[in-house]
Image (cartoon, rainbow over all chains, first blue to last red; front, side):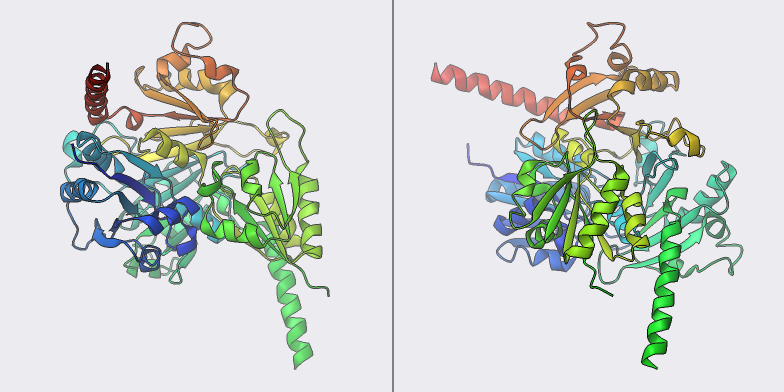
Length: 270
Length: 270
């Protein structure tokens, strides 16, 4: 029996090169081959100049490698190389389709290890400076995707079509965003509930939009209801909804103070 | 006006020293002072030997520093030092009580930045080798705490007492674990739904217990219903519940194969 390599499923994190874990970075530095998602930021691949780099996987709306083919390449790589890194955007165990790759490795008798990554929701909350949970306001947060995978309907069990939690984070929910907002209003959420829409989190291209649940519900029917320029974005979006994401009183106070300081400084330099 | 330092709220991750982010590790290495949770693993503090290290914060059931006092120490530190790191277990924006510290910093006009961390649920899923979401089985996961903070009842808005999502992860839910399981059975979850209970995730002390939702509901009434030794644990627990966490068919197959190999090897060496 020939020696088989080991496969490391590594979470790349949200995008910034230094938001990968120390363990993930060390594995990239010693990898013989790195099979990475097309969505992974190019800067991250600078952490593994010695490795053979192979782009695989999906990019929404673009050409993609089929999961079966990715599985085969992973198994092939482990039969040829000692240290194989499969670099996946965010965290491998959350919306990462890791299960199918792990099954293939298990069936081929190949050892593996999983290294978690910072998922976008946590990096997004850090970027906004808002907690996903908040004393007296939110004790639960749900991470949700509405993207229905191809062929899923046929073998789908009964899923919770309307997950409920104090804070809700939708991954890649652009096309359903407005109808989700309408549903949430019907369920009794306040029209004023804060909504933040983020793209390219933690990268230089990061953008965010802050609106209310009512703005989001009305986006198709009332073009003047808040800034809807996020609809033109080509990037995957993260949509955060909940009272915990409201502006802090102290933030308002502090912004006010800073504005007074800025004004005073401007006067002084004039 | 004196120069004020900058405060970095850094997520320490689940425990293992190399599951902090590269950015977090770099900030620890250059910090003048590090105010860390009592729960943070000692190995992590070896990343900041040059810094003044101050233990603050909560440890369940043990002596704790009041939040108001932590806030004051943070502000004091920023008035004295250039680079202040506030190191928090897991991720700062998820069950991290970051909001109260950020409010204090904002009121004092102190600049801050938040560095996300790997939350236990992601490290736990990596350790189990199970995805929190799974095609056709789970499109949502909720992270939940049932720990009611002192004085919370008085100012609490209406929270979702029973969050629903395909996969559920409870943080520190030991005392309510059995009643949560009973509730979930009443809501129609299958008695066979997989449950994993984890402690000290990613450290050398990591332990886990696998049972069913029915086992968990019966833990107080039927002592023979599965292994209940997790109840004697002193560590914070993570409880993962959902069909996505079931053993893969390929895992069973592969374990079977490995057992045959092991058996064949033992025979050979005998």
